[in-house]
Image (tube, rainbow over all chains, first blue to last red):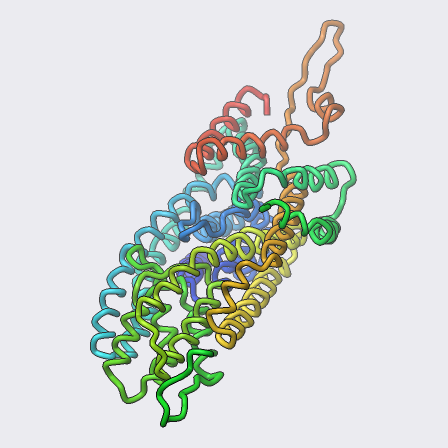
Length: 248
Length: 281
């Protein structure tokens, strides 16, 4: 019933989050946890949406910003398509993660497209500077990228939501059990990619023992994530002087 | 401020809180919005300087044009820590407007010289450590279906990063360019990055243990009718061996071949489907 409404909302959300209005604000808005909140509010299935959002989020944990801003994967596109479809069709969190994968990669191309188009506004700003057109520069920096963003982004997510839901529903009715289980296995492994990527971005091999401490604390001692955060902060404080030795 | 000599007769023009605040907000709101492959953040950096340029070079249209143009050159950094560059650029423009002999290239080279190191700090603290750590804390809540996990990270991350950014633009503007070189050599920044990385590593380990849930259903039928459950053998060796293998296999691949996302995802899909088909995973 609310298929159209949900599709429109997701299209607009994707546009607004990837508009990057507000640097860190939009950076977080792009994350699946935040997408899940909106899906939960619209569908009324908050618990399902957040659980699925958590699953999709894990895969994208390390995918934030890389030098030069060339993000290898787009959590916002994956989230605004996989989460609403998974919630309305009733997929498991793992299956939702598998569904999110291709869209995350597709998102990169959309971003490359807008950055290419954005070069146009810089040239307009060159002219505006020459004519001391201050309002023009503001428009080049905010208004035009926003408009072109809407044109590039909205249709993709709207269409994927509007038509994708039925397609996914049909697919689920026909795929064999082993394949469905295969998707769940995928969902069980894919978060590893997010973690591996974060370790890579941190980029310090000699800190890997701390990874194992966190791993064992949860695996064997069932520590809460909050406990790890507090212990981790304490350890970080205790060993901070190693930073200076490292350089020397 | 030691360069503020010459121009004897007139009162020095000072930027007020208003222009600095405007620069802060314009850049914070739009620093990635107009990002283009050609000059990345040049457009927004220029836009953020407009209020200051208007005030400093009021009545001198040529000087305004030149100022706009010199801030339209290539610029790119991490937006949170990068506000430091804005503060310095504002301080330099102020000195220049008051008659100090600062060339265009001096301003540009300070900007381009700082943007790299500051982006390095910002990427490793703000995006690679702070963001995943804040999200990590809320993941268990999300898993239990709580809506707070959707709003909590958004509020905390935004407020913390904007506060940092605001302090930096204020400080760097008032201290000027001399401060930054000393700041960059200051050991404290290294300690902060190091500490954030240690915490980040531990959080990644903890989350891997909770959320990489791959296991094997494989049972070996031994002669005599008894069965051996492979997973329980693995558990008795090291709990969570398969998740650990998964994380480190991907990690080592990325170390060797770089972050080749497509190959890695393709391999995961292949392993999952083949494993599921043969009942290994």
